[in-house]
Structures are given as structure tokens and as C-alpha cells.
Length: 149
Image (tube, one colour):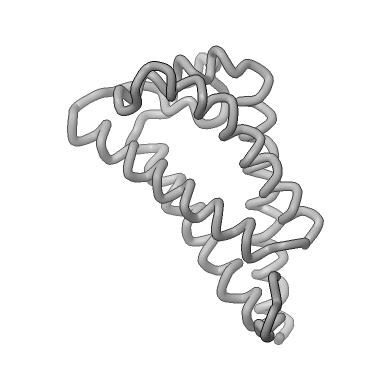
């Protein structure tokens, strides 16, 4: 891999690691408050809001740690890609339905609001980082038969 591609790969990977470790840690400190934020989207049945709040922070944290350690990059990026796509669909749903809530992505108790549109733009940027990390990982380590990486 040439030097520029290597810098972009490692930079993207580390930015994603930091973002998702932080997001998972913040949400994991108060799952009840996070469940309330999930409920504000008015998409899931009541009990599922708590299930999402109990699982999502630790999934983000695990994927972020894997990215930080440069281990199991492709599975971590794939999980985060799917999660980010779901977040973007949920945010788009809020915009279409005219529901203006704080996204609850990084701090459920923050005074500074993140509108759905702002969060959608941020998630689009994260999606670009996820795609570049995925693509450049293949250039750095081409998959082999039986390669779980």
C-alpha cells in the first residue's frame, strides 16, 4: 500500500475507533436515559427500546476497540456500517415525519442539541470513513481463503 493510502487507512480507522468508543461509553453509562432517547424516535415497541439501549453501546464499544487495536477490522467495519445505515434511516424517518428531537448519539443528557439533519450529515461523514477503511483494508491485506479478517 502506498504511503498516502496507509495514512488515510490508519487515520480513518483511528477516527472511527475514537468516535465509537466514545459513543459506546457515553451511552453505556446511563442505559435508561439512552433508552428514553431511543424511544423518542417512535419506531420500536416499548420493550425493544430497552433492549437496544442494553446492547448497542457495548456493540459500538467492542467495534471501536477492535478498530483501535487493528484487529478484526472487516467484521468491525461491517457491523458499524450496518448500524450507521440503520441510524441514517432512523434519522431520515424523523425528518420525513417532522419530529425534531436530539439524536441522543453522543450524550443523552447534553444541553447542546444535535438535530436529526445535523446527525444525518455527521453519519454520512462516518459512512465515508467506514467505506474508505473497508476499501483500504482490502488493499493492505487482500483476503485469502479462510481469512476471517
